[in-house]
Length: 619
Image (tube, rainbow, N blue to C red; front, side, top):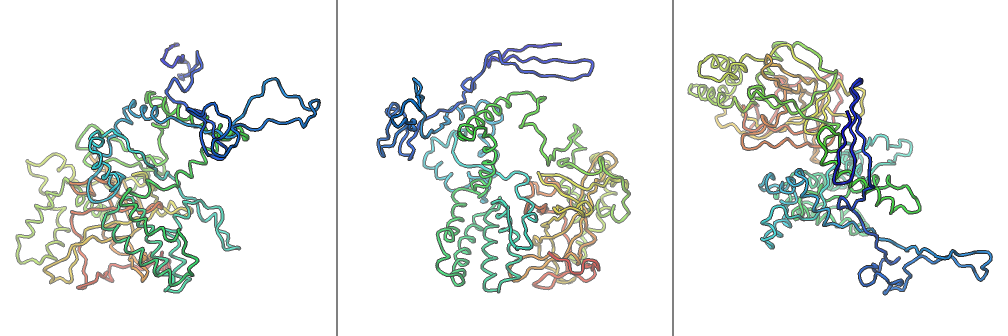
């Protein structure tokens, strides 16, 4: 079967179906060679002065000499030095401009943004879908954007009006394997990229500084690294910005007591203004130059004629731009950069049954093809089921009802009320599901998960890849570390009648990734983790002691934004760093009991296990 289609671009598309081998062949023949002008995309060559004084355009288009410096517009033709026999010039000499500016018109390219439905929807994102609160996440949250809206109200009424600025994001694999850059014999680092220096400043430099330098030198340097790390957050509040402004002034004053005056050039003074730039223009990652530097490598790859590299780059960029524009209008069956599956693809499988989607399916499980079947013991099965119930927003009304029944016994202390609620809720929930007026999904959920589960070694969600400890034993990259911020009820003693609720950060390591199966009705992915004791040193750095474990009765973590977050918000957790650490926030759920002294939290000895193999392990 052969089909011929004609298009406005004067292309003939021939589709051939080979029935024997069931293979489709798509061939495109140009009946007439199309030019970028057919797409409304092109660029202009404009001659320029070699000293960048002027452009030969408009009224100067026919001039041959610069009006400012007197330099010639064209390269000088070779001379014969009076001996015409040795060198014969052609009849017509082609003049070559000394310098050429390649101008890509902006207005036609802006019009293309309104032609595609996908890009048209994105032009309104800053007003339709942006979360509007006191935090800065987007340039629209900055004061410069808001000042422009107030100064030009007629312009800001139309949401599709464009504001020009840099908007960049770090791609996957933005940092190198820094261990390859280490030269142990010379004790130096070679061959690392500028963004590698960014990672080292934020996360690695503090460790050797505090171990080598004296305290009066190490403290301001550690504070300087902390300043840049907090400044580059994806989400930052105005209160944090005000604190960073005052902190950097004190830090630079401490550095003036250490380094000589010649050290303090304009670059050292620059951090004074960086916090205010975030307040005005939005988060740093929308304006820094790291992605631009990476894109320079792409542009260099377009060079084919080394004597004219600028022309090669312009032609290569134009071809890429035309292909990108055309690919937006191809059907989904054609593979393009817009429907290409990413390396860290986390699209889950959705079903039409609303009960089966009680838990989100976002995320992709990896490892050993379809997973390894395991049988959970009774303790692990109970722990996992309890965590799922306590973190499901649909079960929260039943948790509150059970809590109200526990509080009716006025003789019980608050400590015992919360403890009994944690221990007795599963049995109460199972009995409550036997009533006739409960939904069907309650009965299905009350049965608990099947003992037969699936174990995986990797999980991809929100564009980040997580590994279990056993998967990364022989790997250099560590992707098994996680952190969790949980709302915890702290008691000074059993007699304490006024417990304190606070968000406490827990640090752990993924030991297993388990997919619970509620008898083919629901499927939930849990991280089974080891939690460790942490402490903060005098420099403000957090130490995680891998030889001191805690909270062995609560090993599971549910990575599910729809369940972890409260009803008012469905924001995804924000990664701490690019090494696999991620915040798992679950406010408003069943509290965890911790015995504490009046002013400081302590972990019970019975909650701590020592690992004789990791007695010196800490990070």
